[in-house]
Image (cartoon, rainbow, N blue to C red; front, top):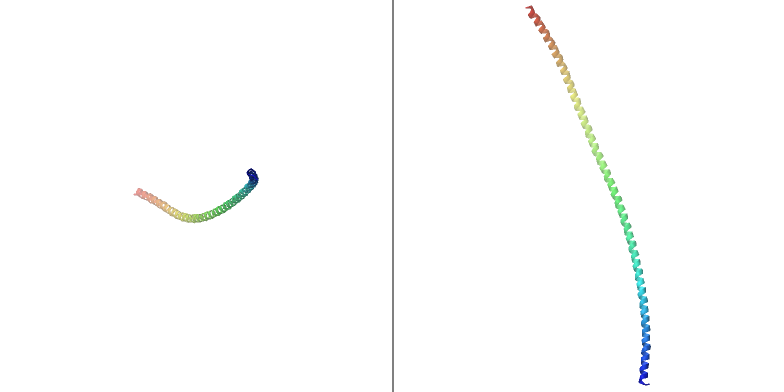
Amino acid sequence: MDRETIVKEIVKALELFSNKIHYEMKEMNNQLRTEMQEMGNQLRSEMQEMGQQLRSEMQEMGQQLRSEMQEMGQQLRSEMQEMGQQLRSEIRGVESKLETRIDALKQEMDKQFEQLNEKVDLLRDELTDTQETVDLLSSKTLQHERKLRLLSKQL
C-alpha cells in the first residue's frame, strides 16, 4: 500500500470518525437542548407553583389580618360599651349624691323658713300687742287731755 492510499484511508477514517463525532455532538446538543427545555419548563412550573403558594399565603395573611382587625374592632366596641356603662353608673352615682344633697338643703331651708315664719308670727303678735297698747295709751291720753281741758275750763 502506498502512501497515498494510506493517507486516503486515514483521511477516510478521520472523516468517518469526524462524522461520528459530529453525529454524537448533534445528539449531545439535542439532548442538551431537550434537558435545558425540560429544566426551563420545570423552573417555570416551580415558579408558578411558588407564585400560587405566595398568593395563597398572602390571601391567608390578608384573611388573618381582617379577622384580627375585626376581633380588635369588636374588642374596642365592647371596651367602649363597658366604659360607657361605667360612666353612666358613675354619673348616676353623682346624680344620686346631688339629689340627696339637694333634698337635705331643701329640708334645711324649709326648717329655716319655718323658724323665720315662727319669728315673724311672734313679731306680728308683739307688734299687734304693742299697737293695742299704743292705741290704749293714746285713748287714755286723749281722755286725760279732755278731762284736763274740762277742768281747766271749770277753773
